Length: 126
Image (cartoon, rainbow, N blue to C red):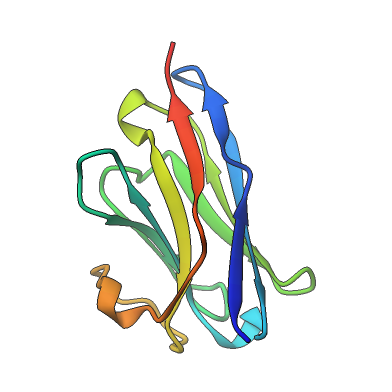
């Protein structure tokens, strides 16, 4: 059974950092791309970042470019989202997702992702 488990969320002040982790079970990360999405209160879910199966290719939403970094450790079967210079508008529930493909598209299409984690809350506030 495929499952994705996010961790690492929390509350930070503006300018702070957090590192989210996505640990799947039921499949091996080295064969699949992983995407990160987020949903803020009252807003639709949006794509944040994606990393290819090899880890050589990454995609970022314009709103997080230069501040967030996605990476993966195949030995630990874990994908990370390092979030720096956090802003209040980054406050959201963050989800990782997998869709059975190895490369990321430039656009984040939720329907392409089949398996989703339960989400982890990130709150940026002073």
